Image 1 (cartoon, rainbow, N blue to C red):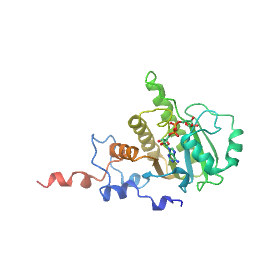
Image 2 (spheres, helix red, strand yellow):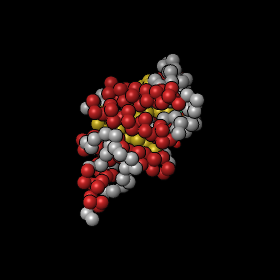
Image 3 (cartoon, helix red, strand yellow):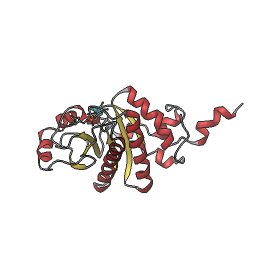
Length: 220
Ligand code: AR6
């Protein structure tokens, strides 16, 4: 069973149904309903998503591996590896695009996340930001539409999930403000814990409508 972005609630839907808790910290960006309709958090298997592009957490060889990379190669079939063999690898922070083959998504953006090191936090942050930025640009350059992100570097590569999520969401907010071609960004989370992290951080970058966030408190 595959899932279409049409059937995945947007932030706008999640705020209306109170499925996102109130922001823990003050919002860093202004409320924008148009943007809230272009972003989703979805717990599921990225290989079952019918997007225009999905983002694979690859390594610099671009020749497959474990985790989400392994799952994507298995679901796409051997033609994906054949195309990857012609790409010549990629640097950390860079992204290269292939077709999706047997996947329900049209394209795969293979991005190389940093291997986290607590002694090189700034460098890792810059590289992870570049993964999101270059993936979003790749989607734009391939006609835009819906893009599904796996949570880059937060598995085997050890990036702390909260820090990585802040970078993912902030880079997206800044990109979507200037772009019209990417109609939906879907953060595909694999665990309930990751889903909760995304939902706790997202109101700082994509705040809820003012009435939805403060009504209850103002009644008294
Ligand atoms: N759908 C969505 N998310 C998934 C799926 C799936 N089917 N499977 C795993 N995840 P990881 P990394 C989540 O380790 O940290 C590979 O060997 C997973 O729960 O796949 O960037 C590559 O070849 C986690 O939240 O990627 C590299 O060598 C997220 O995907 C290395 O691992 C990323 O975890 C990259 O490590």
